Length: 138
Image 1 (cartoon, helix red, strand yellow):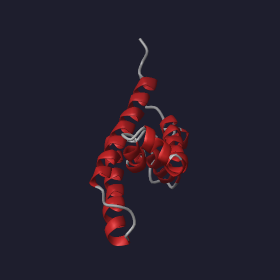
Image 2 (cartoon, one colour):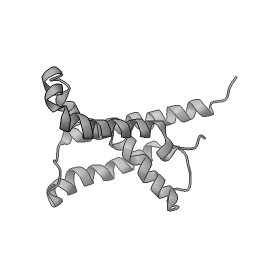
Image 3 (cartoon, one colour):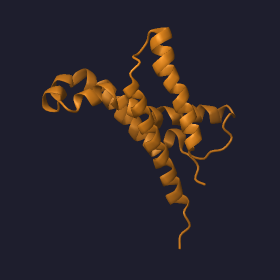
């Protein structure tokens, strides 16, 4: 099985760059431009694009930390159960604990859909890449 790249993974780096571009440039500086010219895209970019990138950006960092602390001895790409476990924990933290107990964030159920969609796409990508790299050649 192919080793997982953690912070060197291409999907992680691409997703982190997309998150930074959206969070630091598009939303704060291009809101009027995007909303006026792409009114269908603005609600997604402002409200859900970052949610879609939660798993591809955060999971490699957490798994890298866990690996460094010896809590994740194997170096395979994250499996479905591993992704779903982190997704469940982060969903509870972001959509229950944060909004209702800490009064931080918004309890938007649509965010869970985007968390899940990003997680499914990322896990599929990581396993597709690992399978293609490790597939025997005829």
